[in-house]
Amino acid sequence: MSTIIHPLKPVRSPRRTAVTPVVSKPHYDCTEQLGAVTLSIFLPEVDPVGVEIIVRGTDLIVTGRRRHVVRVNWTSLHLEKALHDYELRLRLGSHLNYAALKADLDDGLLTLVIPKKDVGRAPARRAA
Image 1 (cartoon, rainbow, N blue to C red):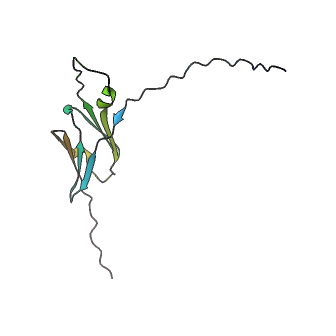
Image 2 (cartoon, one colour):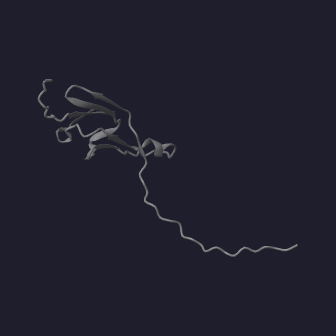
């Protein structure tokens, strides 16, 4: 009986990758009105200081950072899951005026009102 000895493979160091923070997608509702779009986003345990709104082109990114309070008698059971921050990424389109965005946070409900752009309408043409 013969024995097969495989050559040793070089030891590779583990690749270092960027650690992405774990976030939860919040519940939200989007309604379109005559002159604006209203977003209602549920962000429990988020203070107004912890809300960040970023607009990149037609994308809207809303980040809500929870207040992280660690009690004296804390236990590690499900603590990691309970302390996730929120992140919502939406592509709403180019027909909105993001510079005039208005936000209000009341009792864990963030309300964003984004008015629509005034598009100059072409005059009506008559058929000859």
